[in-house]
Length: 368
Image (cartoon, rainbow, N blue to C red):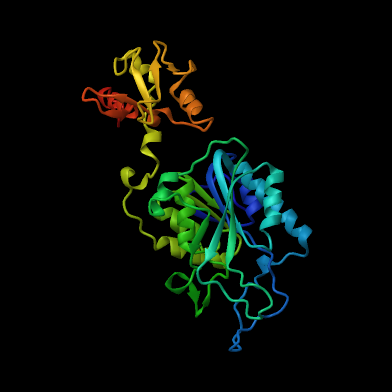
């Protein structure tokens, strides 16, 4: 039996995931990726047109007596996951139409708050050989925080960079695990539902930072651990099948990540991480002056005058912070005043006041 006194980081723990999760410290995990049994047992064998048998999922771990048994199992492990998840952490659960709607309802019942559902569209899905249904060409990932209103990690700019500078969408076009990446033993798949590393790469990069703890309660062939190691995250794997533990351990041992460099592996938005500077600090320190005029979105026809208390006064008499005034001018839309209000320099050019904030940080040695 696993002891909570044993070291758990960067380790595969053998046993039942619910028992082990309940033995782990409360609120100790930053990110959970769960690839649970889908309960998709085939009622009969499938054959290709050339009369070769389809290597489907017929493992014992995917067998449940009925839907109620599956629901009870899902509720137990999801509840245990929520206990170990930090208040700032998130969970990703992947599934197919066989199970994802049942799992999603249980997650909501337990208090999880959905952030997105992401559709993994497979570029090379398995055909429906019998021709009685559409080819099942996607799986769904549910991404949730621990509760409504929780603060959580999302590396928006990193995802944007991965997507050619455009905001990452919730439909991910990625191939299934095949070729050299697919682990095989004696020519057969080592694990029937091995996920591609590209999928876990996006999940881990998007929702965690270097040094964070990533947990996978259904570790399988170890994709989560392998990618976490490459990205310098700590990881915990839970797996009840010893044959998979041996495969996953060998796979992860073979991973040699590049040496950690904070400036390289930390993809958080540097502006968000920068020390806070209040608008009033710029005013008190002389970077801006009482009575000075600021221009909204660099348009000289729309302006506000700086009051001595740090508020702006608009042309219609409304007074508020740079953000409140910007929101009013944008008809209630959220507004980052630092980027939307401009000041006039000595040469008559207009610059965003965010430049003054950066100058203040630099001149006051606030940058690391």
